[in-house]
Image (cartoon, rainbow over all chains, first blue to last red; front, top):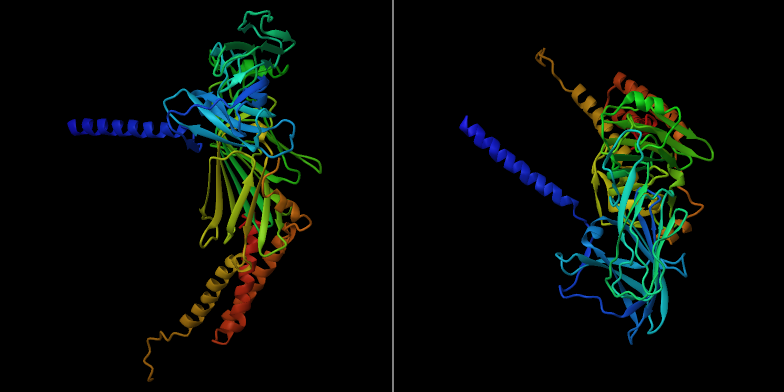
Length: 494
Length: 79
């Protein structure tokens, strides 16, 4: 009995160690620029005017900072730093910076900076495309979202109750520089905001917030030093699901022989809404469906696919789910799926959807050489009014066997990219697969294009028929060879 | 706001990839080629000589090779 007990103890230790290792995987994968631990942004800039807009209309907070920056140094400067807490750094997604005066221009280069992993203040470095001359001004438009930042309060509610969410932010926008004038606008999904922080007015300024329907405005505030924080907490009604996809695996498989591109998406979905305080009542749920009240459960997901998509499927761990509808005509191709059960707060629903499409809309042949260019959406997930957030996306573009010289470009921020071989039906060496990984993506980035170019030599295209040809021909030769063997028992002489 | 390869995509406009055999005729082509391959194999079976290995074997193998690829595509496994 004793060795068994020791063995089980060892096993349990091993499993805890494994779990601990697994949990480490949740740390952000972003590439970082390492700076000395004494790093502090040089006060080369000041913010002449800043408007911070926090949109709480979806299931994740979306923030945008429009700031007029001014170079107060004596030389031209091109590095602007934006501070975040380490908690915000782990959940921030889709950070994009552009010139507000030139919205169609290219995105600015943004990089996470690491100088001291223990410090609570971390920075993003924004590189201005052209250095800003002394005393010159530029208007930056900075947008980003936080994932898993909204928390329901109370944390458990009854099936038909309303849900309230809490969000905490700072009325003074985070900045590594002195800000001369600023205000923070908060857009709520409705006018029902039962609790919010009130900031008393000082020096002739009015009390904050000022309310205008579902929009609250904190400020405007006068000169604020770098790093100043004024915590504000708001609690507002949001009786909709908080759809969180912890893992999305999306495969795009290109077939030149079949003239087809096949999409498959595997979702690990969770609803982060308030959990149920009582047992789920099917009767109450079914009777409520007649008047369709707002609910925190995920009832339906709508995928507006590209026109021309066909053969969709929707399965989960049990098998095919029949509660789906596909409307396809010349103008639209909408896949509407209903999960097997309403997904309430704290519940999970893993599922997969897939569809085919004709290749000619997505693939073009380059005029020179044997090159091809593929243009596919990076993300084609459901389009929900309450929004969706994706913690981890693995996108795999499976190119035909023998494709080489693979290059790609996308405006979605990526954390890693690699090329490998994927072996499946009738492959000899394996197909070239481009794997792209992105973290903390929100559904605002839906339909961003991914362009892949590759060379596909003429002979590589014939690899499959050649393999079958050689094996069949050797079968003929073997049939003749074996057939002409003399295996008679009778002696040759007689 | 465009990705860096967007120009490459735009420059190839008017040159979409069109497969040799469209999706609608894959089954017909695959089935016909496989039938031809099967008949030629039967013919070879009647007269197995060393001359017939290239004379019948090569066309039969070609028909089976391309027929199999198109038949696999026609049933939905896009290789």
